[in-house]
Amino acid sequence: MEDRDRGTCRVHRDTLRSEEVFFEEQRRIFNGSWLYVGHGSEVEAPGDFRRRTVGGRPLIFVRGRDGKVRAFFNSCTHRGATLCREDEGNAKAFQCFYHAWVFTTTGELNSMPDRDGYSPDLDVESLALRQPAQFDSYRDFYFVNYSLEAPSLADYLGDATEMIDLTVDQSRDGLRVIRGHTHYTVKSNWKLNVENTLDGYHGEPLHTTYFSYMKEFGSRRPTGWYGDESRTHIYPHGHAAFEMPPGFPKPIAHWNPFFGEEAKPDIERLRAEVIARLGEERGSRVCDYTRNLIVFPNFTLADSHSIFARTVEPVGVDTHEVRYWQLAPREESGAALARRLDNFISFLGPGGFATPDDAEALEACQQGYSIGEVEWNDISRGMRRDPKIVDEAGIRAYWRHWTNLMTGSDLPLADRPVGHHVGA
Image (cartoon, rainbow, N blue to C red; front, side, top):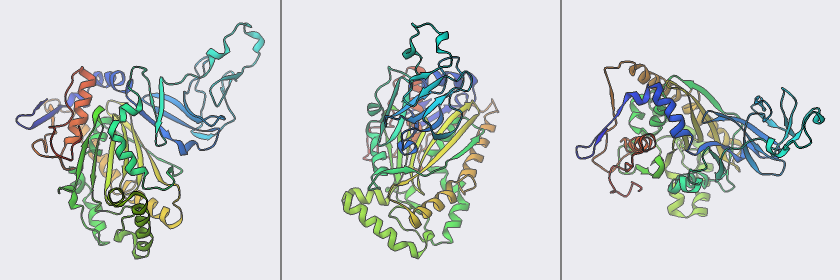
């Protein structure tokens, strides 16, 4: 509920605690949105695979022996058993443990025991592994969509690709996923985690221990959060992003006392390489800003303490699973890669300064929603000005698109079509 004339916007808490709303989301949100599966570097060689759950469906993310990347539903077409039961690996084929049907890495049914027991007219091609309705990639980030009626990935991402490009282009040779990932469960509605990603307002109050820790290294506080240097971007289809000058260590091209004086020449060299390759204006934006992008409904690509991809997978109305994958430039190794890993773990690792804080806050909110007499959340901050990242413009845009999908409305996503920091 919002009143643009008065500059107020509220969200009813039933959207975060109702089982009925949760089940309707699976149909209206997750059945027709583009959902992140994985990065091409995770399946680098023919036969490489990863097992994923995306929008409630178990998938096999695999590079076939023909070199093409695909996604298959992880279900044997015989009697439905889970086909791939390993999280990752390299396979010549996938064999079902139940009746030993064998499928190629390109999805065809290759063999079955006692083939003579079936009719000669059996349509073997129809028993190939099933694939999602749509599967596509942008800059080696792969997505699925379970609806043929949904727009293409290119149309869905639209101008939000700008944020992906700014992140990927810091590397000369492209990005790769660093082996391993972070996986944990939070006892809150999944949308709270998305809100939190777009919420710069909580940074200093919630993560004060981190900023006090960084102050000991001589780091300045991120004053850009409240200044005109911060930028909020609103895109069609509910995507949103923010950028700001980093007030904390950024491994690529932005030195911070946390890294130590010995790292300064290497980081300055990296910055010079990026500027030379991309030009002063674009190179400075790549190097001198951090950014968080939300691709609706549940994917984050961030370039801050490190580069990470993150998914938020709903499990129940009050529970979700979070998965992080850390990425790095393909050409990065040695001390530079170690700095990146240390920086990520110190802030965003499961025992880091931020992640436990965020999980505690989200779970505290969910506990508060058990009080039925308190009905509304307020997300009005910044409605009467060009948005800063401490405002809630991105959160409002997200909720407006959510409302459009859930109710058939046609709400404009931006607060107002003014300000050079707001996309259409």
